[in-house]
Length: 308
Length: 314
Image 1 (tube, rainbow over the protein chains, first blue to last red):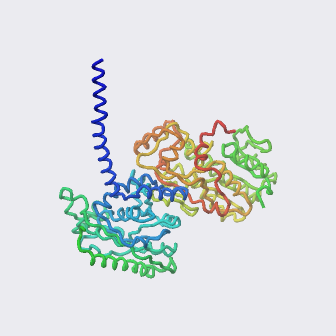
Image 2: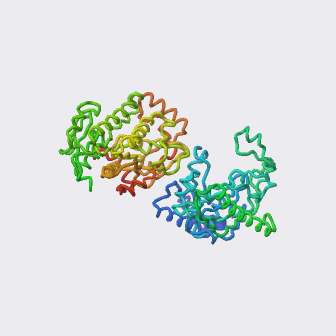
Image 3: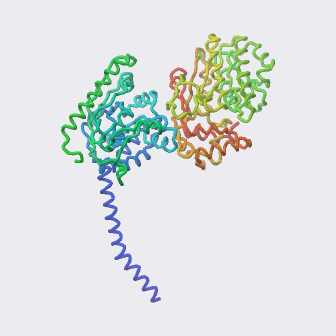
């Protein structure tokens, strides 16, 4: 009986003294975690996710397989890089229309982090939030997991029919007309736009879609590429074989934590015949290229610090 | 002019599950005769059934009666276990005979049931393929050659017989009591899926296909029409909506296992058909919706549940 009473006293003491201490510690930890996630994801992250979920539900579901839950998890991971690692700052977001548009940006950085950060800024910084839809390489879709993942976060196979359909759905299409030429450019050519393809221009004219020029500053310095080894690329059947010494340093496999600045320019509209001669279309594409180059030059002139 | 004002429609492959659905739908509008060597028991009393092979002379007599004004050719045999050359040539021979009979007896309308699967599942496919897309299903699987060649043969009829109103209907995966690969797949107790692949899939209810065939019979309609049902879903979602257990296998394991099981005649799915649960193969049915006025009546839930409706089926 005594033993029972002692046990009761002990549990009472545990409940009245130890539990509140544990509870307070737990509450503090939870508050701290919430604080960090609020800082990283933003106050209204959940309402952004719900807004997008409703947008696609109203369409009867995204026909390309975008899954809001998978996209939410991907953005949650990406938000760490977006807010803390690259400390992304955006300018001119009000130039992005609520309807369809082609976001044409400079491409760089050896691996397409610029596309991911551009996508996350449309999700986290733009109001109302949008899903940036980029076109991915055909071979990526034949790989297990990659194909499913890309589809579920809203990326689609790069064929013209898909681009037209996305624009008909009033989506934002992210285009990097420099393609592989841009992403593999050596450090010495940073912020110098490479040749633009003209497919995006034919698409914009045909579908009467505004082009939003986008300049991304920061990505071009994230990996210092000293040059591309052509023979190695040929040997390994890769698009390019960049020489990036930093990957040999422990931790250097991560990109350098440059500050990302993303500038959205005013919408450009082009008319004319989408089936015009290549030279006519290329001239119009050149105008877009020049606009982005000007935006980059201005941004670089204003930039005082690489990291702040 | 509606289909009800026209003459008799002759349905090949009447004894099949889809054939019976189509006959039940059409017999309210116009007389229906069915052509199928198989026996069939549960037809409406006013549907005539002639148990003859279209290649036999008995079939000719039916046409010679003079009241047939349209043919619906559903008699395409999909028997993957049959000798390959036999079923390949059989399908083409039967369809060729049907076309010849249509020509001889000046029948103005012919509807062929093809399939959107003829476009073929490929990684580089556009998400939705229009009727102009090339039929590439035979590229990797010879089993699909028969279907592709049948469709191609039918396309040649467009210019060889300009007076014949030919309609090629290419539906997405037909679901229902029908015994086709997609319905059989979803009826499995444990549904295998491929690790790392979850393509969007398009389904259509068997009665929506019957509706599309009815609309294809309207006078003046000719051409090729994709037919899709409710909006597409990811394969995993479709399987989970049916509360099926799934087993996820790496592609190489699934392919090896399926090849052996198929060789032992334990399954009816040839290994190359795995591509249908690996890559996307969907069609754009805008043309059917605008030209034929087709619109699916069954939503996704109803379409998927239709594969389990067997015990209620007549």
